Length: 93
Image (cartoon, rainbow, N blue to C red; front, side, top):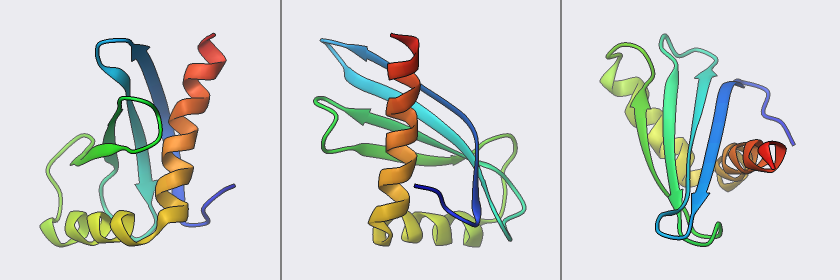
């Protein structure tokens, strides 16, 4: 699964009994000036909590709000990003 206007730059994921799954996805969205970091957390790897941040510098408030809306509405995109982070954990094993 891929997304035509999103480029993943870096993924990482760890697992511990105490915290569950904790990861991050760095990505760039076409038409957005700045790259993003999505921080992820899930006890069992099914329901995810996340935070969206600018990766390097503060960027456009409108752009990050638009990306947050997109992540909330586009389940396929959200799943692709979380699955990419989970794949990083599997590659470490």
